[in-house]
Image (cartoon, rainbow, N blue to C red):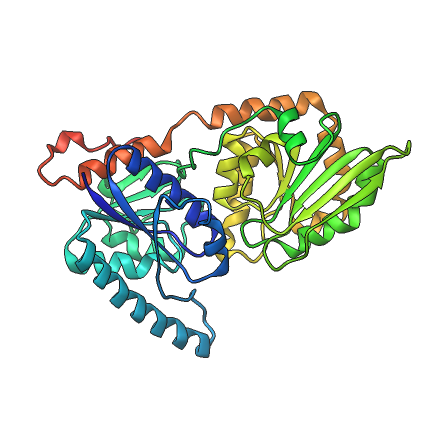
Length: 374
């Protein structure tokens, strides 16, 4: 049995794959502690995982603002002290960072302790933590086809983000009924990521009556702090009831994606991985201010692979026509779902688990390490 420390806090895109990895390690008899941030979104996301061990660590995201930068540096020093104390207390066999501001202190503490350190990047444009720390890592997992010059070729492996075991497609009609929706009507689900998307939420509120007139139900996850939950009972052109639902948060993502005919979503790598696993076509609206514009790269790759459509946020005003053209086109939806099924062939979690086991066992023969494949 081995023990791992996993830093994965700050956003759902970091936390969800961390949870997937921790559950996979537990299934194979290993122990892990997940280091999360002090953000409210982390506290909400972990509520349904009481069987896992979480620890909150200090830290703030990077910024160029002089005052905020000073606070960031101080917080990261505190986080480094915290991580070194955790390493001394738990004596882990390996450390894993999923990027973001919680990864840097853990990886640096691991290097100081001489432990194997591993980084995972889900996005198609590697973030600052991966770019800076990758050269010090024992292993760096990157999306297929992504290259990073600062990382040694021998340390690189190509895998997608691990997906939580609960993320599986369920029968559509039953899923709709579970949310109080009409199983016979088309359903558009809107997701703005774990922190919500104000622009998408406003579009949903503006367009809900028009969508209802065309017989399309709407289920919008607004994000915590970005609106109150409410249900609107609207009418179609023929006077039949059509529902529009707004909720701040949902921890039933697999069921919700299974219920949907089409999803309108931001383009975080974690959200895309869950869309792929549930075979749910999507129109992706990349967040235009995402670090290094990584969401635009994610959306473009998703579109090239045939999982759906990518549209700039500047085109939101005319996107209702795109939604209606897609959601009522059964041939196109089947085509998208077939492509999504093809995209989900690789099991990233199993590949990572086998590799981590070899890294955490120094006496293991070199041949046990996972082969370097693109």
